[in-house]
Length: 180
Image 1 (cartoon, rainbow, N blue to C red):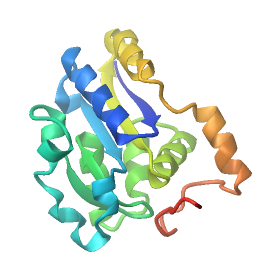
Image 2 (image 1 turned 180 degrees about the vertical axis):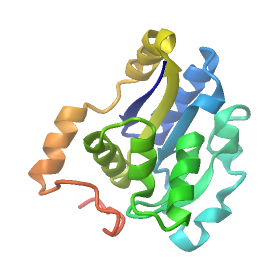
Image 3 (image 1 turned 30 degrees about the horizontal axis):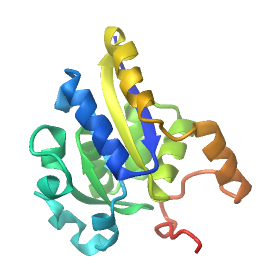
């Protein structure tokens, strides 16, 4: 049986190292996705986010998944660096005008609606998620790689979000700008 494991990280660089470790561990790049914020994505706007094809080499990764990373715009999040099946699903859903581009992609991948809202909000607030499709036999090895990079503590982050008045991801909200 196949399932999807997803973790969120505070930095794109950490997520990039996780993707590299997964590929080095034998996980096919076709089964890995990364969606997140990167300084390069923040310097663009929604109107030219699609011009990001080919930035993979600049953002890390001469081969594998990261070589194909590009910029896409996701409703409620704005421009992000993304690659893999999850990014393709989110972009396709958004392009088709279907509500819940990233939410729909995450729930289609097998995540609960609550988890999908958490992951989408984490990306909106500057984090990066890595999702991996795995067989039951792969779960222990993939979890060791994902958790070895110290992902965000989901429960603590959710408590932080809720303390600020957040209840769910809102794709109509403007891109998040941290308070200085």
